[in-house]
Image (cartoon, rainbow, N blue to C red; front, side):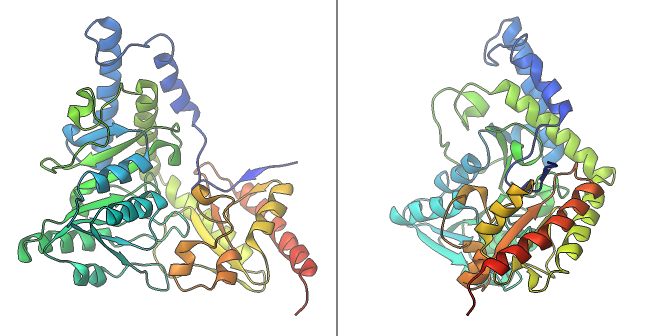
Length: 386
């Protein structure tokens, strides 16, 4: 059976170049990057090279790059590292659970939290952020690209609002971007975004699992989530995952090449071709249609179909897709993102996310376009009448 993987927003496979870059740091160059003898120096040089690459990726200074375990740690660090009892946090109701659960925890500890809802197309209105600013606003946290719909948020405008708020309202608001789903899909420029903090994860961009990075602007008074040694300039304690960091650096290098050589534009064309083919099915519609989206993602609802049943039916035919965030796999609750956009529970449960790898082909898309209509028709035929 031919298998086609279309759940890149859950995770991506290592590219061969990434694996080859990592291989020596598991065996030959196994040293601790904090050691001063040869093996340690070899590891330190590898970490430093990866930091240079990530600085280019973010468009920041090397000293502003902090390596960590991934997106969840980065999001948690931004919130727990800045927000204290009595502070005010502004975020949105469509964030990843790493932000939402952290926001709930600081609220339980005495912080105030405002959750900004999206518009029906999934976009956050920057004016809603402006209207929520207070003198005690400590942090604004808004994702770059939604993990379920792919909708790109107006982070540049939100960054300007955050900066104006700091000046005009004497607020202390810092700006954090969860950029996990934007990494490798759109050009990054933290200076243009105007953010103080930004989080990414390697495994969403053909790098290894368990490693990520943060941009932390110089002067941002963030308390570390992990304490111990003086690693990462005392911003994240723990012996560096050298092989993982090397893999992240190589993945970032390849991502920049993909943005420059037309690969991402090609993926957008494939996504549009996939979307057009599936929308030929009666009762199908795109969630987030009309809003700017990352090139690889479409979220489609199918009337009179249970999304979980369709995921299983497609898997049996060799097609891997998702009913929403991989972090909520197996949940019986409908997507909080789609519900926040105004879909009812039935429509939210009837929605699937298709997210393409950058190695996707025309043949992959054509295969899926052939499989999905039959699976939908079969499930509708089994549905009870009335």
